[in-house]
Structures are given as C-alpha cells and as structure tokens.
Image 1 (cartoon, rainbow, N blue to C red):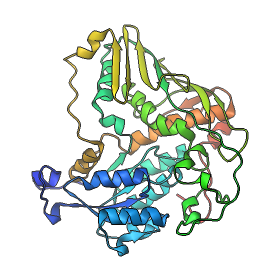
Image 2 (image 1 turned 90 degrees about the horizontal axis):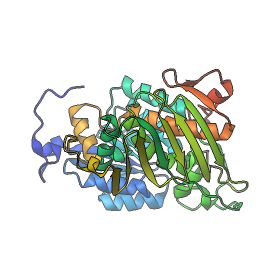
Image 3 (image 1 turned 135 degrees about the vertical axis):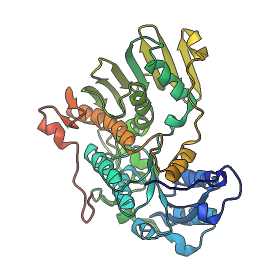
Image 4 (image 1 turned 60 degrees about the horizontal axis):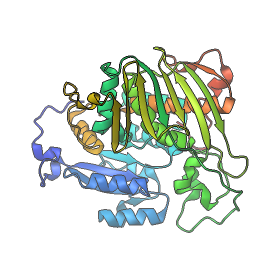
Length: 399
C-alpha cells in the first residue's frame, strides 16, 4: 500500500513535463455528458495519461476517443475489456447510477483505483458491498461529490462543527424535484447504441429516447430522482457538518408526490425530515431555498454554490477558522493515488451520503415514519422497509 520512494514534484502535477514512468494511466468508463467533462478535467493534469475510453453509445465513444487522440483499439463498448488492460492504473466511472457499483466492484477486483460519480449506489446494500470490496483490495476511491473540495462549503461546515452558530437545531436543504412525462412510444434502438448493455442489471424495458442518457435520473430503475442527484451533494455536506460520515439519521419522515403516468416515477415534490441521534433535524424539501441553511441557537449560515451568508455577519470574518486550501477534487484523488491514502470523499463517505438519500426515498414510498440503525445499517423492527434496501439484478449481472 505504501510507495517507499520520494515522489518528485513533477509527478504531482507541479510541472508541465512528467516522465512516462511517473504518469498515472487512466481509463474512462461512461464518456457522454458528465463523463466527457470528467475526462477532459483529468486530461488537464500533467501526470495523467488517458489510455482508454468506454461507452455503450458509439457516438459518445468516438467523440471521447477523438478528444483524447486515442487509437480505435483503445475504445471499448464493454467495460470488462478496458478493465482487462494491465496498463490501466485508474478508472473514472461516469455511467448512470445503476452501473456505478457493479463496475466499481469489478474495477477494484482488477486492482484499479477508482473515481466514481455520485450518487455512489442504487441501493443501500450495493453501497455496503462496494465499501467491503474496496477495503478488501486496498483501493483508493474518490466519490464525485466535489462540494467537499469547495472552500465555502468547508467553511460553513466548520462554523457548525466549532459551535460558532451555537447548538445546531435545524438544517434546511433545498433540492430540486424530478419531472413527469406523458406515456412514451416504443422506438427502435438507434444504430451504434448497445441498449441491452446500457440496461445491464436493470429490468428489461422497451427502448424509448426519454429513458436513456440524461433522462435516466427520473426513473427508479436507474436512479433515485433529482432528490438523490442533488442530495448526494447537499446532504453529503450536511453529513460532514454533523460529523456523521460513519453514521446517519435515526428517524425519517417523508412525504412525496409522484407522477401518475408515463415512465418517470421519482418524486416531483417532497418534504423529508431526518432526525439524528443528537437531536439535530435536517429538512430536505423542494420548497426550501436551493442550498443549505444551518440554524443554531446563536446564528445561522447559508451556503450554496457561489454564495455564502450568515447571521451575525461577523461569522463570515472569523479568522480563527482556517481550512487548508483544497486542490481540485480531481487533483486530490490523483495525489491520494500516489500517496495511498483516502481522498476527501472516500467510498465510505459516498456510501453514507447516498444512504441518507435512499432512506428518504424509502420513507416517501412507504408513506410512514421509519427508524434506522446507522451502525447495523438496518431498519428497526421493519422487515418491509429492510427489503427495500436491496434489489435483484437482471441476469447475468450480480454483485
């Protein structure tokens, strides 16, 4: 696990020229949309050598291959072929959510370090399985919840953790809702799109354009709605502020509105309360202002992307709180690959933050108050809710 040699500064991306022996060979799995942005971001790091790309959409695959200047032989439809390459050190997984854990588990078993997009998992059981595998194979793992590497969010969390706003009573989290859609016609699968592989472990459903690519977020078969999409960011920050990276809420009360027709079935509106063991209440709602507002007995702090505010205003000038200046989320991962240590959002963090979102969805679907044991990762005397922490997979896929 440890590298018993001195790592020169060029190998850490501090110079433009990096010796080939010091480069980190990377393969990107899922290179459309967010995946393409991730790929381009890693390519700007001097010590990264992109050697392979994979996508079930030939259009995405070819665009990424051309961007990276790769030979056609380094472009794959099946992620298992990319993982078989011994020259790949790290992989970036930017697929739809239902593929995150199966691919990440395979990558860990193939001795690759992993950067995986959020939300980490499709179910709580999947996330736990991934944590166990990553630990077993001693892999470095970064979850793509990049707000952990943002100074404003870090500062807000430290105001809470240090008691500057007094005792935390409530955190109000504003998140978007999913949308509905009219019933969709069955369509022919586009040429160059391996739809069966895109579905993978998810149940078989007929192809329609509104199901795939960026639209998958609205369908429980592949994700948990816009709630989990953004909850994996904002509720992750709440977990950090509450020092709950190894824990979670103990009570969940959720109410949601769901589409009554069409293929989209995740919540369009919702109001969910999470109560933690220390009495703190976290309210996640489509009615709250987008971002996070921490309310304590002596003040409050609000933070969102690009903005931070507080009362009293003097909190913003608190000089005693000095978070170390963070590198980018990508750079943090690469440095930790070299140093063999956990990055800022390791697999256990991604799992616990995704779990909060899964708990909210389960509470909304069941329509009743739930009690959760975060140490055992089971509901308290609730077999029906426990069954919703896992799902079967379409053959031949399994964890």
